[in-house]
Length: 445
Image (tube, rainbow, N blue to C red; front, side):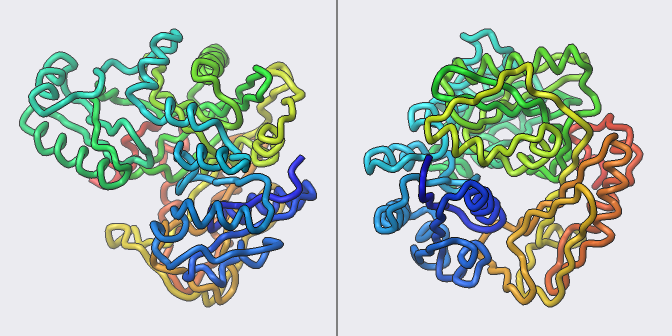
């Protein structure tokens, strides 16, 4: 087992990883930008190193500085968290070159799964159902030809990256040129790769993802699903486990497909296989995320497995030690993402000093955050400031528990979206569980 791990991230996920390491008796090293000098993860870690100015490109994406901090501190491994460098094959390869363990899959696996066009081909060869579509198109003219074959509506999607970037919905041919150019431009800016491909737009559909754990000895298990259909501009807002719409037979088929997908790319560590489920109950592979997900919390609550600890154990060369038969989904968990933004003003980001903070409590209520009294939220980073997660025996109880926890949550000094979550949880469509990926879009019309 490692004796010291560097966390190449910030915010709540850095805090989450540090806590897991402390429980495992592992020393921690934090890295921080000049804007994050007073951040919680810096004070919680055993050591900390400033790696650059406020901008992400000069700090949290600065591979040379992060590697240097790991070497100087004597860290044997780096945990990338999610976002930032977590799915960067170049960084994973650089860690290996410097004899530092990257806590995640290999650089080769990241590259293979991260290229969505390549991943589609791999899944097709492995017998995992994929959404009807085409390979990467070379130009606008080929995009038009493929669009005619696939039919409208359709999605133009970036082959690299994630987080909802580089995706455009096209309803008819007249919209194609603008969508193609904008998606490619956005993807090039965000990921350094403007390549795009086209898929049929499934409507209505649910976004269901499957959590997998794979060790270095060929063992792979699926820890069940997460329902992620409540989204705004392809960014998830509310996630729950299990999904209210899946019957036992469909769940088992999707879990088997997820394990098959992971094995098809030679996966090792924690990963997520994402599917779309249509109204007939057919499911299709969307993509594979080669990292810890923001919403890993609901899986932990329902299965009892600590995913961060298992990431570390697997990276240290340990076996899973349990099989698919050992995995049981008990009860129901729901997470809502608390963002520093104003939903009533087109989700305008908010920053500033936390003048009052009260975190909800009670049995099976969890608030993952890096906030503390008088902390100043900087304007340079993602707007998510916490994840409120609850667990109960039934979905109905979990909804009521989350509503009660939201009522108790107090964050003053910045604007945030907890009121919006209260409204979403009260919607009849949400309470029924029969909602789809267009839930937010329909609601805002």
